[in-house]
Length: 196
Length: 165
Image 1 (cartoon, rainbow over the protein chains, first blue to last red):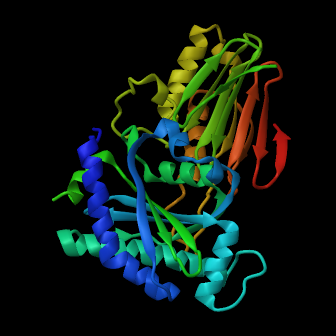
Image 2: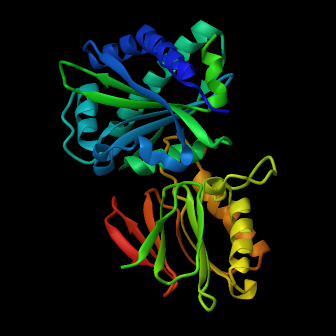
Image 3: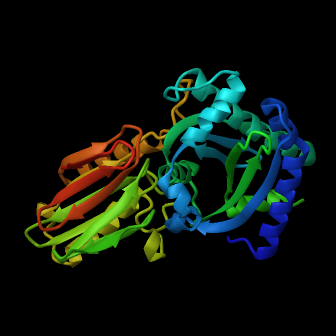
């Protein structure tokens, strides 16, 4: 099954409303500043051509990433990522102290927590709106090149279809300059569940 | 300069010329290589998942490397058609990493190790010796196979190493 242009536009708008309702307030409260967001693109990509969503910038930078899998009435994957150096700025803001050394221990936990909160807020908004029961996995943390992260997520997603619907969301803190990226990944056959 | 054939996720290619090289990138997926150096036939698949659940065979050519069982079946048949002797076919593999680490012991993300376990089992069932492998760990790998030497070269940009197996 593949999605048409209208479906993708609709999904974009539905996700945007969930993010506005719950995610932006949750993230803003956690980071102590008003946050902005934009859904850069929602597209259907063939799993055989992940290069379509790997930009040159992402190919060059090592990313700090959190992956959470959602199951239940809706099957969805959420990958949060940002360049490794910027993740130190994020962790420093969360922990209230400078992070000068390697990302480990409490530092990686704090970044995982951001992934947890972002994903949980979206799940809550979806549940409130649709009544779906959705469960999320424990967050998985990694520091790697974007290609590796994406490959691992797509493999883990265990998709039987040849394509995936990927929505790229960017969160931006105008005061701190923090930029957090998030990919929301769904099976094409699942997206209709959000368009009711 | 060799002609490099890049294999996409879930893809599979077979070569019969030493002027060609097979290349792919794997994280938790596995690059499985079968080769018969005497007949100059080699194949590589980018395996994403251990087994196909519905039992139906893929019809789309660029997706036949996706499942370990289906990929090996296609590769063995394809190599024999191109002149490989099944008794001489050997295997090498790389990848199957666990990219995401968890604070809990829950192993929801162990698709990498599950892929390598499945491939070892299918190779055994087909009496194909696995002569070398570079699997597991937690990083992505570029993998290149050279049909002339039978060498599998593995490169990690993150860990900054290159090794040949």
